[in-house]
Amino acid sequence: MITLPADLARTLADALGDGWRTDANERLTYGYDNSRRQAMPDAVALPASREQVVALVRACRAHRVPVIARGRGTNTTGASVPTSGGVVVSFERMNRILAIRPGDRCAVVEPGVLNGDLQRALKPHGLFWPPDPTSADFSTIGGNLACNAGGPRAVKYGASRDNVLALSAVTGTGELIHCGSATTKGATGYDLQRLLVGSEGTLALIVEATLKLTPLPAARRALRALYRDVDAAASAVARLMAQPVTPSMLEFMDDHAVRLARAQMRASSGGTDIPEHAGALLMIEADGDAHMLPHALEALSAAARGDGCLDVEPAADEVARERLWAARKALSPALRNLAPGKINEDVVVPVSRIPELVAGVQSLSREAGLPIVCFGHAGNGNLHVNLMYDPADPAQDERAHAAMAHVFALTLSLGGTLSGEHGIGLAKRDFMPQAVDPPTLAMMRAVKAAFDPDGILNPGKLLPP
Image (cartoon, rainbow, N blue to C red; front, side):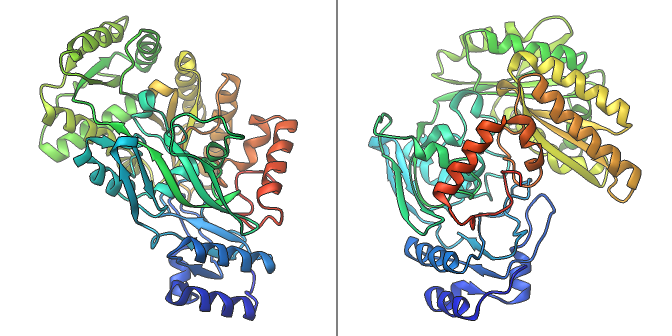
């Protein structure tokens, strides 16, 4: 924690009015995120315009005061925790949808717009923005862009980086820059908007985004495939992604996740149709023209069948489909029933290596004597590895963190990467030298220095010391 210079505090109080907060209770509210890490900022800024963001960054740069961008704090990596003190910049007041342009299939928004609010505004136009993280109803577009959020639809439609056309952002020097254009093609210089997506607020503060929209599919149908064990399900994922029909969603649940989903369905509806002998599950969805869907489902169903497959059946109707996906979305909170603490990481491997990843994680679970629950976006090779333990037990705490380090090493040995959509933040920062070679890390540091020469933007995150 630093102490803000009095003249800086006065300057920002004058510039932001009631958007400048220094009360201890207010500061505490903005000092944590969903990683359960916490630190106390010196002040909180709630700008209402890009001009206020420019003034804020320039003033903080003059005094070398850290600036930490924040959406709604739903990230799980500690990326928005102000570990070096400074000023947390919350974009909750910059929450306007500036334009929806159906003819150009784009929307222009401020960073504080909630993903769910944008989807509801787009629906009457027959459009949607593809990124759909579990936190969509209460995570911001700015936060989604900061960590390149994806979700189940990314297997067909891509993650945030694939669905942004242009950005306006304020660099660490207080300069307002404009990257990209509201066109789906462009070859005018460097692709800076894609560079900023996933940079976790370490290069610039996004103040406006032009997003690429997609027409809502006319129809969608879901399949549920049950398997004897996780090996059979993981092998089926590779078969599904090797055939021509791309599913719009392909979600995997291991045996722990299946048991939790079964319990959730019983609690919510008083019953379940997931048989007790199912050791793993795939949820598969196809979308598109109604007359083409039967052919797509036939192809997906054929690929899903194979050694160890117990059953493949379609959701009878939209209610059944929604019930199936509700059980999947309830998994993260349901994990707290297994243990008081969890380490939740979202590693990614090539789809063909999923069987090896799942087998390796199961082996690590046995060695550590701790449950590890795997589920997630199998069509991208992106699995959420949830290691459950009791943080109050020193022996469990040590085994849990050692096991997760082995999960990262396993992932990298399979040609994978540390994160698919959660980002690096603090949680995986110290593993970056294992994932990125020294010349590439040096180039990342050079890029950081170009955007933020004084290192005031979200210091200590993403890049290791």
